[in-house]
Amino acid sequence: MNTLKTFFLMAIMTFILMFIGNLIAGQNGTIVALIIAGAMNFISYWWSDKIVLSMYGAQPVDSNSHLYHIVENLAKRANLPMPKVYIINEQQPNAFATGRNPQHAAVAVTRGLMDIVDDNELSGVLGHELGHVQHRDILISTVAATMAGAISFLANMAKWSAIFGGNRRDDDNGGGNPIALLGVAIFAPLAALLVQMAISRTREYKADRFGATVSGNPEYLANALRKLDMYSRRIPMSNAVPATENMFIVSPLAGSKMANLFSTHPSTEDRIRKLEEMKYER
Image (cartoon, one colour):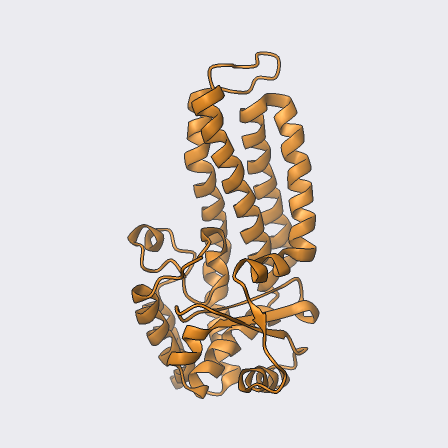
């Protein structure tokens, strides 16, 4: 099912890229955008994990570290290959998983997360991230992040094309309409975000349930989410990239009201409520 979701995501994002290319430069722009989309799809599949880790300056942790051993124990419980483990030098508490499949997965946490949670809460968070690995959500997340970033880049090009070149319409190619270009500059990134939202929200609940199970107690993750929600609103992530929002356990943009309106995550209250309901399941 997730393979179909990934292809569906790639198809929609490719269409948006081609649409923007057509408006910028007509038929020639469509061809260029198609080439870009093909390259981005290829890069997304093979290297998007490295791109995202590099984007946030993630550093690998030593195999003798306490964090590494917690991930190792959880991976054994979940019967998953040991992922690579990284730490990000950010004060906002957060975490994400990336990679194209369980054999090429990575888990990254911020220093801020390590500062505010105990070992039980940390195991709940890491169990959640391993849930994304188990369900193969990580490919969808990284593809969505990479393609959304490309769409935002082209939408920005459309904006400047409308401002500086919109009056030089190429009648042969059919591109350059300034009003259409400005519309694309505004709505194309929103469309990409809506696609991310549609795919992202349900998978968070599944990963929460997995994290609660593999860590041994739903309260561990519930308590961690309470802290994450509170601190993420107070402490901004200095280099947060909106296109990667859906990858994190809580939105790194949580301090922004507009970001909350279009968040790729379900509300923390709903997530905690569902975790607490697990205590009464037999």
